[in-house]
Length: 128
Ligand SMILES: [Zn+2]
Ligand SMILES: [Zn+2]
Image 1 (tube, rainbow, N blue to C red):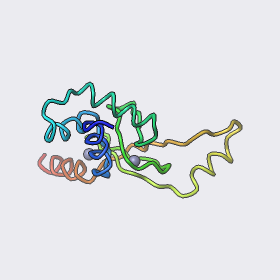
Image 2 (cartoon, protein in one colour):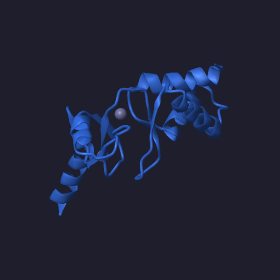
Image 3 (cartoon, rainbow, N blue to C red):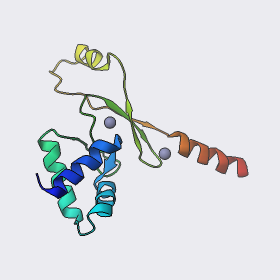
Image 4 (tube, protein in one colour):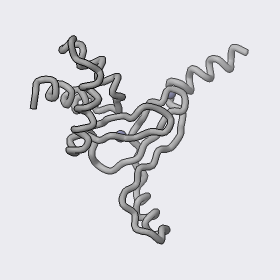
């Protein structure tokens, strides 16, 4: 593994969050200023294929990368697109029980509003 690859991987692993390729790029750039966004993309996708990190494809916005490899679902804020892990016990079994075709995996994204955006909206509404 190259120094750049180690750096990219540790940014994702250390953050414990859901990062876009651009956010990873901004963080890597702090220690390796000459890094190109394209190589960050390429390496992130390679790590995801190698199951070192997880890539979540989102219809609402850019893909995100995270280190939590355990199967889990997400709450996504419809305003800022921030993602949060969301566990629903028994959900996968429930879906399996109700499906006539075999289930490969369950990746559920629930649209929500995060506390930050909710507070901002409330503030805005109170002004008018
Ligand atoms: Zn939000
Ligand atoms: Zn997650």
